[in-house]
Length: 359
Image 1 (cartoon, one colour):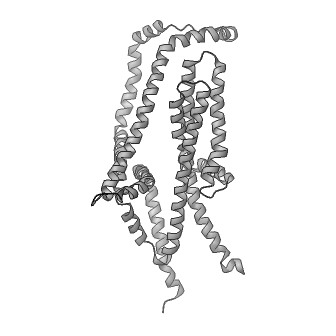
Image 2: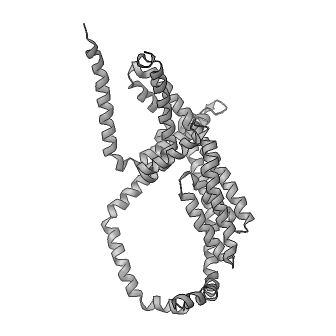
């Protein structure tokens, strides 16, 4: 006859096994980046592969392998399309900067040199020919500065090679994850104790639905912010409104990165295009309004409501993720918070139906 304590032993073993797995995962975290990136991309692209794999050309079925190849080609194609749109426009902006550099120097002399001379006794004696002479005469100093950089690169060559290998691993791991997604999930499901399986499947299903809603909400925010930046910067008179809007909007899924790069691009373009500092103010106003709109309206509404989180909870989750785990914490705060919310909801239901609560 088995005692109650003996019946509970397998549960403790499972807990120890899970704890050991988490420890190993933590120790291997430095090499887990390509696998995590591939897993996130695979989760996002999985519905596309599922849909394409059901296509048929006559009696010939596409199959999951062909569907995976098509999906990855689509992903590469969209990325290349964005690069082909943005890079030529950035190249145009850099050419304009080089062409207008003498005008900018003349503007600095006319606008700021009298003020600097009056208050600080500083004169902007900038001469492009003189700069070229200085660079040509002091090329050896420049080479002396480059030498330590090259030595540093040679010393850290293994780290650079490892970074390149990790980058090349992403598409390889992504292919196998997309192709074998359902088989991988089924194998993981087989390891779950049968007594926990039903509840685990329910929680996993709810988390899956919530993460899908999060991705749709985040995509909606990105598209709406791209449109807002494009219209706002165009109304402010910026010629390169479209590339700036694409960068600021589409990089919005990375907190602070999209707005920072977009603002720098907009200020550079404005410096080349406008002659008065007052004309830059509308551009700054567009970015200020955009941050308020995204942080306090669109993200709480389109992301928070879709994943069942109150707007205040969304803002707190983002701040808590940044405080605890820095940039990565901000990036993953909402999906992880949504998953935790599902677990807490089921824990609350279990507590409300427990004898401890009902006594």
